[in-house]
Length: 302
Image (cartoon, rainbow, N blue to C red; front, side, top):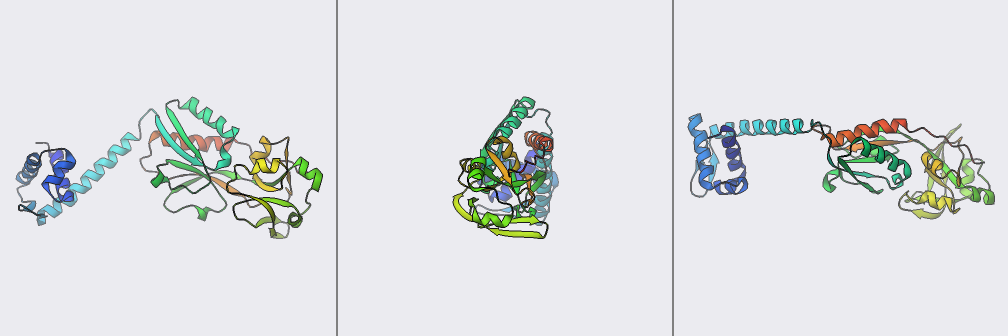
């Protein structure tokens, strides 16, 4: 009989609690399971299990052997996973979640380049602003924009990709009607489009941090549509710098001498051990292209 198979059978008997349950889980007959255990005992020259018609328990020798077997099999499984992750062809599906405002032409261009490089990888991407549990919901990784590193969930790997700069944006038509604020304090007299429940914004000025209350006239639960609302002339809102390029004929930044706190874009995944080649390929690609995107500082609209 094969020794490795007998080791696997023995572990399954102990973990299942019976020969019948082990046989069912391993798709073997109960008689074959019994033969594998008997073979291990004969080969070792010791009794591993005390058993009767209703129960079984480990002998002292069986306890030692079980712990060794479990360690050996776990090491073997880990090695097989590691070798499997080193395959030369990147293929399969990579499930990604990222903020709603990433659903723009720039991301589409990046994904087109990724597809040219890795035609056998399918990217299954979800644009949403809620905090996704990668493990429970079956995602391979996330792209997340965070103001503070300590706001990232515990137990994940978070690789910073680049800084994300935000500016207060307004439509050119809105600025014609209401004029541009000359200081953060003047924002209190302008209509504002908020994301979530924010009621104020922090700015960094020559005298330090300034917290400005906002006159909110519209709230969005996601950032994805805020740029469109600003472009429609409803009010002002903080926007990532890349959106000013996409809406360059409609939007203008204001108060560029008073930067909003800088955010960071991270690629987040559960473990760096035994990463499948498809996931490693996507992470490496995003790290490379993120460094190529120019750090755009739009000209002040006033």
